[in-house]
Amino acid sequence: MGLAMDRAHGWRHARSFTLVELLVVIAVIGIALNVGTAALLPVAVTVEGSFFAALGAGVGASLAFWRRWWKPLAAQLLLLGFFTFLVVSYSYSGGHSSKTNWGVNSFWVGGYESDCRWYTKYMEALEAPTVDWVIAVLALAFGVLAIAVKLHIAQQLETPDIAERPRTEPRPKRRPPPGIALRRARKRVRRSRSDAGGMAPPGEAPQRPTEDSDTPPGP
Image (cartoon, rainbow, N blue to C red):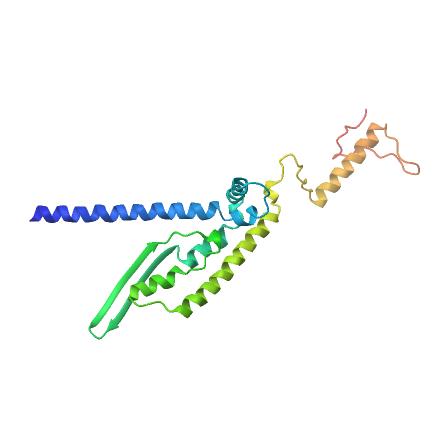
């Protein structure tokens, strides 16, 4: 009997571990799909050519510039319930009940997804039917959110990035502080005068080399 119980417990542990692995795989695939196709529709509608050309351009732009919109995309996924974790506790005439509901809900936000999984999972935990007007209000709100995210992605696709400029473009030089710049200018003037044989402009006396000059004094 004891051996049978150990085997049963071992089978249960193996089954739960396999379920967790499956959820991790689903989450990774879902995140990769949404990140890799976030800009698919905004780019595809502007590409002339075949379906595969538009698809390749959309996926390429999504993978190249995903850092520009990953924050609003992640917020949209979390608000729609890509990951859900609920702890529900309620009382009824026969006693008290508590339930924990968690899971991974993979979906694609590229098609203006507006179904909130938080509400449906919450009602499932309560074992109660969903309310139609609540679903309609949530769909309207998350539909507006989906449009806002798509507009943000389209705007970011048209915004140039300083980090993506060609490396051959010269960078602006840093200006030295005013004091150092003034001393350097004085040294250049003294050096040019010494190279000209000590000739001074008309009306000025020739200056002798000083200690901070680069030209050594003559014999």
